[in-house]
Length: 167
Image (cartoon, rainbow, N blue to C red):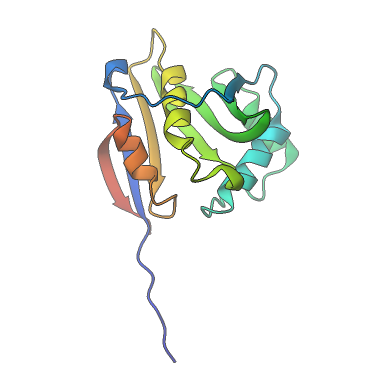
């Protein structure tokens, strides 16, 4: 019997300490970025499930409607959706924690991966995370994520401040 040992998952924590550190990439003209006004927890769940199934996002798979509502319907939480030619293509979620803003979730729906939208969407997320009171924008990613995720974060100006192995 041949048992293959899998590599441990690496987790990278990245931060940006000044808005000037952003190296933006533009979104194409056929895109539109929309910020949710009233919370739409079902949309947060949809994006989490559909974006996350490729990258093994599992932490919220068993959440109830009430948990999704509690997550999405908070003053410190923002959800943004990317439309490509009018069709939902991706999203990001921002969480404010004191004067830090976490890019909590970010990704593209499977049909839009590899179409050159990731850098522009990430730039838009970072731009919207920075406010007059923001000290830091941070995110974490892991080796299970898209193979270019870490490179995209670093290309936009994020710096790694911590690296761990999942236990």
